[in-house]
Length: 248
Length: 278
Image (cartoon, rainbow over all chains, first blue to last red; front, side, top):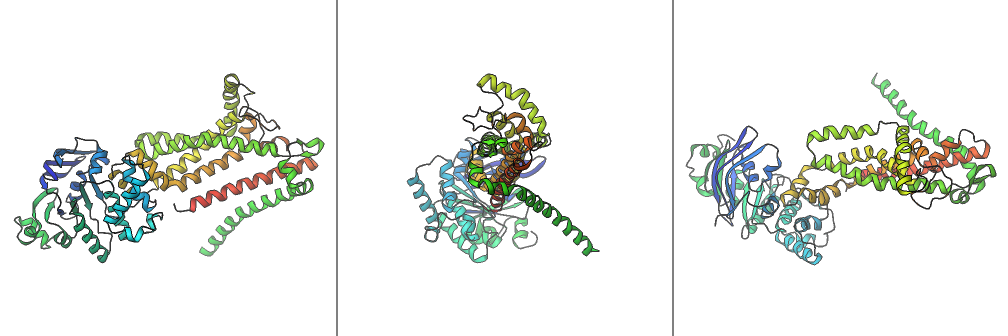
């Protein structure tokens, strides 16, 4: 089964037509990247998949979207967002302890047992490679961590609620090159268990990390396919112009 | 020219600090001797205030001030913080535009008007429904709670709105509800600011005089229940200053010294909370 399928998806911000008739299917346990110039709608498309756009007043979404076969608007938004988590551009750990950051998700979804939470925290931090560094610093405020650690913590915070899909909105754009490399390695680890969709400004990053790639322009999904074929023999002229750096 | 202006501004800044220093000096000069003479312990812990007999114990007033302030906070803090949460997080901009100025307007109503409402409406209500004299800790606490609302609400709104949007987004993106996000993320993040607002509101409550004189009943006895009359430190000074002379007058200044310390401690605490980062 496909992880995400969208058919005839349109998103409007008031009178502005931000996503135009997008049809796409995202395969499970792979990394799919969305590229395109600023304002092309790639972040909007990403944020449609966990309904974060709904927080903006005046948004209208039409068309069919299914996440692992279940319609996007067929369940309540809280359980949908639990299944489809999101990592943001800037690391945004809560101003709470490391432990409480990771435990936040499970707690709001009803896990109160202390031992259970301890296990979830340990498991989630291990999965993002932070457990060894932080296991004695769980009570420290998360804001005291480095940028890379903060972003890893945000990954861990998501994994704690055991989502099916991880949406990443330029997750490395606030990190230095070395941290970026390490976070990309982490993404390769995570794709064994999770479906990842990443929006990136950085075409090299898309080429490095993703198996599938979509190129967006002015709200349209111009081209979608295997990343290597998009980057070596794009079928659309506009894609070619973009990846060869003629604009963007 | 610039130098001159900056000198003038410095002078203005210094003069307000100097006024504070002068006030402190003055009430200390007038008040400290009587405390020294009757002993600080006897003054603070004495239960008997009989100026004509030379008995100056202000314990009943300290208890009165603390009870009324505590009562005002018990009512005002939940109300004010709930109001701030609604206005900062849940309400539509239209409601904010109506409600926020309305709450801020509460601060502009003269305290004597609050006292008047308390005397005419609240005190009789309490007397008939709950018993006692009506003019009581409960009545004064209710009125002071309303008077502290503008401070608590507007500072709490600022504190909540200063929390970066990314925290809220992060929490919602995990599937938390709005309320869970407020309770588990925004409150802890805004805690310092909200506490500062509460402490400043408390300063307002403890320093309020006119409304309290009108509705607390001004009994000099130690209260036994929330329905008893009390007198506060501020009321004690305001009521008796008109005719006090000699030691009696000094004792009123000494009451002011104690009040001064209360306020300093509260403001110090507010500053500490406001500066602390999470």
